[in-house]
Image (cartoon, rainbow, N blue to C red):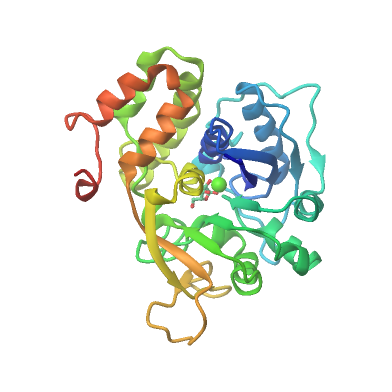
Length: 333
Ligand code: RIB
Ligand code: CA
């Protein structure tokens, strides 16, 4: 089976790191590179973190390219309160020596699109790099096979305001440009589905019992994030948004949704809000598949068994034991 070629545009970031791990543990994917955008942390810190994660999983062969550090128009607002001062849950992993990230995320995206057919982008940070690539060479960007975006919210409340999700809120002008000018198939993996993906204390305890290096890393980098979720919204565990975008790209049956025209608010109290035109008020062609349903159990099975295949049996036992796991009842037929 031909591998699906992707670039992951990200702002690592704790859940971005989990997404990178899942992508690189999935045989269906050919990850051409990581492009780094400012979001959870400034792109310079994100690029160092990308190298740290690649080193932890023995994949420093994957190239890392840094984008410009600032959103198109807004001042950069980062999220160290959520991801820790270092952006990796204050694990302060040692800086990777001997391997550097490169400049030119936008050039790498465009060069890859010129050289590769069937290339897709999984964008799990603010859309600044994607928008800048579109500004630079729209024709080449329209060669993109698929753009899967972790961002936005349809009927779910926001996480930066009542209505705005972080990636679109950090750079709403980039999101507006991408959704209105790319004219390629975009899938919006928004908070409506990612909020169902919670790494609960049960799963965290199971990971601890495995005494496995990657399981230990997941526990270590998510501890800060778990504490934030309890303090911020009384969630027990942590919402791991970004890996769902990877999992959906691998197996689209994990989620379902509807095609709508989506625009993004770029000013005022609702800045960053994704306006999903369910009522067809704009009278515009749909530009996006908005995901609204997710089989969270199927996601968790893919995520955990691919990262820790040695413990697949234990993972499935826990996932299928109603005592320990949550799952969308309607999917659990
Ligand atoms: O709103 C959640 C998104 O914002 C995730 O991608 C998280 O990593 C942050 O970038
Ligand atoms: Ca992210």
